Length: 324
Image (cartoon, rainbow, N blue to C red):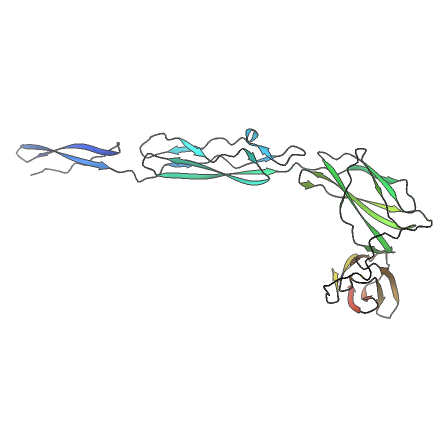
């Protein structure tokens, strides 16, 4: 008879030869051998390096892997205390945004574990243009000058026209302004008119905040009436329903009019109070479909007003509420 049960533990994977001895209560013994096959089904463990962020140099759109300090995984353990190599996916150039680095460990039994390290590439912070000023205005043009913005690789400008006092047209599209002398000439303006302009810097793929300025052109005869902006009688195959969207409404200091369905002809925009008193009336081009109202400049009180848009064929009226 066996006088007990003996337990064994094995540190070696694979086939292990075991000698077993049985002893009875009289001291008689007998031995034998057994083959124990040890299987490894437990995955090793790995902990990734911390996520990191790297900022590009001015004017660059990517970052080379040689300057990205990935670090190394920690807490790499295995149940048989064997050190196995760690691999990762290879990245030569990191683009903007997040790139995942996958660290993987594989033991000799093909059990694997992996973890993910996130590498975030950020654009260089872009400073705004400084000491922006304008001058040398004529009846149709003006120049603006500025000092360099930190890390800037190029500049863009935009403008809008005051159609009548307190009523502004929409901003023009951004235009590149990359004269090496840091100067830009606005042309095609109307005589004796107010304009807003804005300028921003670009660093790689990001833009700085905009710097705003004001312009008043000189009086004088002008043959230029902002050419190519009036698309009256254009062939517009898509006919949109007439609509005036007022944002915000109710409003207090400023509000924006978004006009739809009047794209084929120039139109008249008017604002009336509840007694029919005219606040303003302005004619705008066919493609001018966004206006900003400066309610303080218009000297309007709290109350209900009517915004009306009309051309030769259509008319639309919406209510604007001005609150305190």
